[in-house]
Image (cartoon, rainbow, N blue to C red; front, side, top):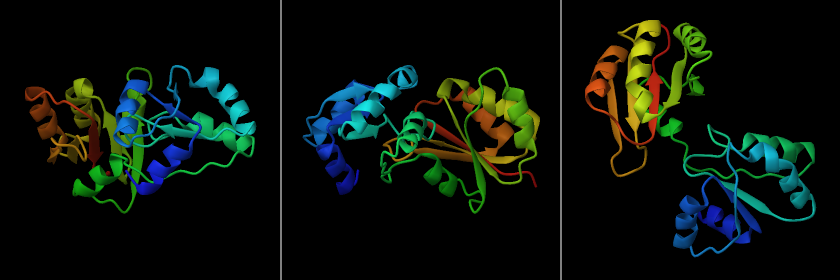
Length: 207
């Protein structure tokens, strides 16, 4: 947390957040008392117009997410786009984004990479993996703990079992860890050891 981020939160009239319960812990720590408004994937389309109206009327908003950076596999893009349409100034403060440190510490080339976010759960999943099989840049994606072993198995089938990869878990937290190996080795490991927490998968590009 930067000094500037704390200052921005102190100045905001309203703070938008994914989960008010989660964000309240952060704000309490910095002794910030501001109105909180839930803003997440289930309500952003409904309330974005109302939020823009309030901004045009002079209110200042801050947007925070439960973890990571707004807009990066988190709510934020829709609101940002509407702000630009209405010439509402927006400033993005640097903050924690899991895929950047995961990419660096994976040991795989990080001069060129592609970020895939979360893969489709059903429709379009195999199509996405076929495209990834031909990608020559390092591939970075997010995955949930309960789908990790399955995803690694499928990636091994589409990209090849020997393709080098790394699974980075709980970036910047107490139980942070990195596992490196082939896609098949990682699939076997996590099938036997169910992971917890937030996960980043980094995969070498096609040779």
